[in-house]
Structures are given as C-alpha cells and as structure tokens.
Amino acid sequence: MGICSDRVKFNVGGRVFETTATTLANAGRNSMFGAMFDESWNLISGGYHSEYVIDRNPDCFAVLLDLLRTGELYIPANISEKLLYREALYYGLLDHVRSAKWGQFDGNRLVLSGSVTGHAPGDGTAIRAGPDGGCCVAHGSMVHVYDWMLEEHPALNLDYQTVNDVGWVNSESVIVGVCERPGRGHGGMGLFSSSTGELRYKFQVSHENQPKSFTAGALSFSSDYKIYCSCRGRSNEYGVGVWDQVTGKQVDFFYEPQGWSLGDADKLQWLEGSNCLLVATLFPRKDNCYISLLDFREKKNMVWYWSDIGAPLTVDEKRVRDAIAMEDNKSICVVNEFEDLGFMDMRSSSASSIRWSSRSRLMKGKIPEETCYPKLALHEGQLFSSMNDCVSVFCGPAWVLTSRLRRSYGGSICDFSIGGDRLFALHSEENVFDIWQTPSPPVI
Image (cartoon, rainbow, N blue to C red):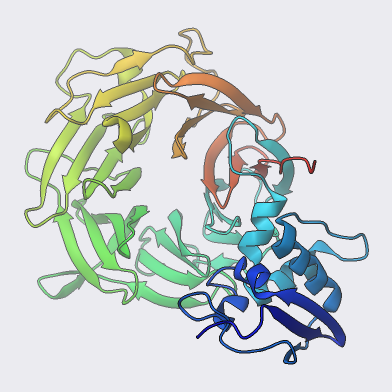
C-alpha cells in the first residue's frame, strides 16, 4: 500500500507532535513505529488528518523523536535517564538510545564509566555481559543480575549449590550451571528469568532413557539455539551435553573418547564457521592441560587436539590458563600466567607446539607472587587479555599490544566479559566490577 501522506501526527500525553514517515522508518522493524509500515516500508494508514493517541510521557517522546530525526541524543536536565530508558523500552528504541549514548565499541577507546560493589567480598567467580549491555555476576550459590541501566534485578538463588558457569540465552533469560552436592539436591542446569529470578525449567541428562545426575561445567551457545555444557557424572565420567534452547530437551551428547581426556572443562566455545566446539581443560584446576575441537556434524569425532602430556614442554606451556579459537586466523590463542600469548594452527590435525609471542610479557620470566587469572576474549577483530588488575588490547594481524585498561581498586581481575558495547571486569579481592564503554563522538 502506498503512503497516503508522508506527514504523521501523534498526540502523546496531550501534546501534539508532527513528523514524517521517513523519520519514523529510522526506528526500524522491531520498534513500535515499525508496525505502522508494510513490507515495502510504506505507511499502512494514517493520513495528515489522522492522529495517533499515545498515553505516555510527552517530554521523553520529544527526546526520542529528535533522536530519530538527527541520530543524536540530548537529554534535558529535567528528564531523568531512568525515565527516558523506560520510555525507550516501550517504543522499542533502546538500541537507538544505546548507540547514540555510546560510540561503536573500540577496545582502544574504552573509558571507565563506573564501578559496582558486590554483595559477597572475595567470593565473585564469574561475570557475563548481557546482549543489551547488562551483566550477571556469580557469587558462590547466588547470581546477581543487572540490567543495562545497572539496576539490580532479583537475585537467582541456587539453594546452596555452587555456581560453575552462567550464560545469557537472550536479554530475558540466563542459564546457570551448578555442581552436585550430597544432601543438597542434584546438580545440573536451569533457565531463569533475568528480570524476576524465576526458574522456568531444568535441563536433564539422559542415557538410555534414564535420567543421570551430573555437575554442569562450562557453557556455550550457538546461533541455531543450541546449548553446550561440559558434564561430569558421579563416577567422574566426562562429556559434553547438547540441549535445545527453546524446548529445554537434550538433543545430543558427546562422551569422552577412549584414550583422551575431555576433563572437567573450564572453557567451551562454539565455532559457527566449522560447526565445531572448542573444549579446554586448563591449569591450575588440572595438572595437565587438554584442548580439543569436537565436530558435531553427522559423524561426531575429535578433529583437533593439544595436550601438555608426553612432550618436553617449557614452563610456559605447562601453565596455559585460557584458550580461545580465532576462526578468521585459523588459529587457537592461549595465554599463560606471564600474559604471553601463544598460537596454534587449527589446520593441522594436532598441534605439537605453541608459537609464543613475548610482546605482552610483563613479568619478565618470574612467576607472579599472587594468584593470577588471565582470561582471553575476542571481539570485533580485537583480542583482549586480562592480567593482574588490567586488561590488555591487541590488534592487527600480528596482535600488537595497543592499549591497556587499568583499574587498581579491587585487586586482580578474576574474570571479564564483553557484550552490549560494554566490557565488564570483575575483581577478586573486593568483589567489585568495573564498566568500560566507548564514549560517543563529539557533536560538531
């Protein structure tokens, strides 16, 4: 249907606004205004003499309408940001507000925007960024959830069971994996509402149509709505379970191959391009490190592996603390507790050695006096590595160190995560997490 008139009128809370269909189209399909257009982006109805009545805050509507017109966000002093975000959520414009408030994510331009003190000093174990710029933090048997305005939602209480990992399915749901404890019920995984903390359903492991108790370890997710979780049974048998995110039903299981140990994996990472899963069991939880790629296509098998067993390895290789696959570079990056980066070629069937880069070395060969928790992340072509109280950023084909994000308050960084155009860093000693984001470009 063609546009009857490009001009559109709104009556919002008693105030009349006039705009154009072209401006409203900037809101996108997922907004409330997107529903006013047909598939060809023609206004379905509402000529000049029609008026849409919306019983909402007119001052916030004026700010959001100006955002659609100019792409710039200006919030007057008489409007609270919380109120504006609430109204933006109603119109489906939160992504537009976030994009205008923050610049495009760039690790070399990140600035510290704030810090949040946790509830259990010294007990923080993991932090995960949400897709919309919020985060969740695991503390023992609790998971505290924050929305993108960093307001805390009702906590997830796991009834005294230790949280091993947590992950976001979407902005409304998180999955939590816990270990099994005698007398405290079964381990496993549950899907919770991120806004209310309500348990929606539990995930079961079955073998030969019989449910099995298991401890859920590391989590990973794929774009086809699959959940991957490392599992340990009561008899210390290991494997990787696969569930459907929508139904919660188990759809596959990869048992530990004979002669090779998947171990109690610390890290899972799904590789979209190759339909493989990286499984890594790392130092210091285990004396030996195992890194493998599991092929989950029709014939499930292990297509790549590395271990520090059976080879004359250096101290560096025996202290691998984290690993991440970089599909574009056909390599797997590892980091040791000196913050050296090592690289292994994924194109060979196995990797016998690691090519180390010493560009990032800070410790000069000395083992750190305090416990270090180096972690790796890859985001928008940049490589991030945490060490002590800072996060290093590496760029380019040679992964050159280009900047460091440092924050001394709270002690060493035990975990960090990137999502929703923010980087969250969780410190171990004071259980405080920092929020880093890219400032928006200045208005010229």
